[in-house]
Image (cartoon, rainbow, N blue to C red; front, side, top):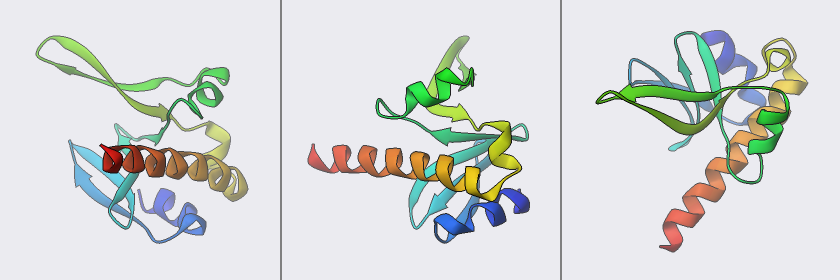
Length: 108
């Protein structure tokens, strides 16, 4: 966990907070990533989802009342965990998606 947070510091003051049996990744109060079962997932939206799908990355899912629920978070590419420039690029996609989502909620 500490490694991922350190790798993402080029995005801003990234902090991890315990939640849902894993950790949420935040800049200020905006969640843009999560770590569950030792897997990093990054926020996606209609602007970035195809980038994740094109790499064959899986969406985060969990079971709720015998139904599988998926969230708009996708597995981070392996190369992002090994290269700070890659992490910066993918992390910025995720943070941008989180910003757009927050803006959309504020507009309602």
